[in-house]
Image (cartoon, rainbow, N blue to C red; front, side, top):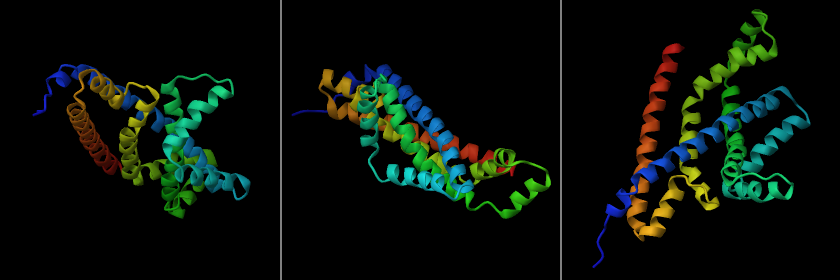
Length: 219
């Protein structure tokens, strides 16, 4: 009768923990870059009434209604066809960035629509131009009000980064596959991997809660 044996997996725990840092790095890079692109998309959406606004909305619609994995595959295979050679790691980051920008633009857009008109009036009274108004008044307000949604999406990206293993990236899931293929303890390594994802998610939730309380005290 087969029994669970975690010893071979625990012996390789440092290797798994190394994958945790790769997982965090992928999600952090994609989130940071995606947020920057989302800010541009949402500003275009609110500042334009013509084709640029439709393109911004079309971008979000297209990428939020197609699988993220297919978007990563598109980056992974299309860039080399255009003569741009990138590593699997960078392909995953680019694909996740494009996907995150679409979702984050919708989140920021929802926050922008709730900004009281008086904020614009105060900024105009203070002599701020449009750029200064966004950077000093509008975006900080949106960031505070939509922080829970932004933090939640980052946690989703942490879990979604497991797709990187499909492309040979040694993130947490990729390391788990490697250990499982050498030890043949597939169930054990996946149980340990799931526990590590859970610990990481709970740790991030605690950090975000502290950040949210700090932001509330600043208001």
